Image (cartoon, rainbow, N blue to C red; front, side, top):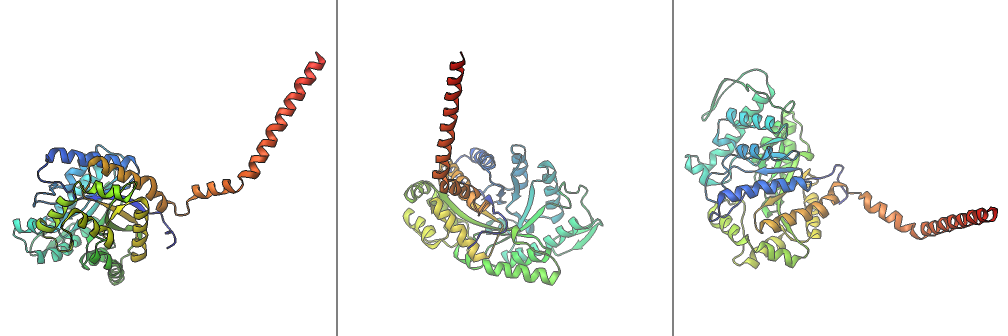
Length: 395
């Protein structure tokens, strides 16, 4: 597939996942350090989730966490991935994002979704079947609050707005970017397409998610046409696991550090059916990702091939988000992300690769220009010798 019209952006999508037996304070500090690291090496965005149960994902307020990160970074975009709008009054959720937009000087992205952990919803008495309809209603409210200067009155069976208005408007004009989560169903694309928002296809590399990519964008365009909004593929983000090293064997050794615990969480604890996994041994777990294309555990070339595969399947997107699973040690994770920054991002940032073209042009003319240089040096030496001889003769 030929290079895209616009360069791809890259980011990191973290829940984050941490083994419940480790020190949570230190784990959270490592998350901050990792975000500072990816900013230094050139990543564009970081996405941080909202979760309240099940032990492995314990950032309950991504807005609060990202405000902390905002004070320790300067360039990277800070995205909620995702705020579970069905759990909150949409006015207060939006107020918190406006504050983050100001504190980060316009680096906030408001990512929203229906919620991923059924244990979260169960603790506050919500039926999973209610979450997606609630998401649609909440996003309707958020967009009215953002796009209207008039107070909003709106009543549903779970929230009420009475002459509601933002007392503080966003730092970003007219407002920050908003994005909706999608996995395999049309729920996310329906909402995003209706309002002309961005889409984040979580699990884009998993079989159901990969197969749904074309459907996702079809729904986006259908909804946009129906409601008179505009959607743009440059705002479409695809998420997938990726850990790379110098060799495939090394990458497999490195992810063996934590992949077994992660499988246990996803298969036996989280109760998220969209992420169906297979494998009982570490090797089988790694093979599940490698052989089925669900993720990359390999080399730079494998990473490039995976992104090309996603471009082909999706027909074009704007940002690839590496799913951070903490499979490897912090040091190995950082090195993997460095390899992506050093060797993968340039391929998609500048598809024509002008540096390689410059090298090739120099290579093709090497012999000719080398001879010219030799001749020029010889002429200079002859001239200098002649001048010295003439001065000696005059003396």
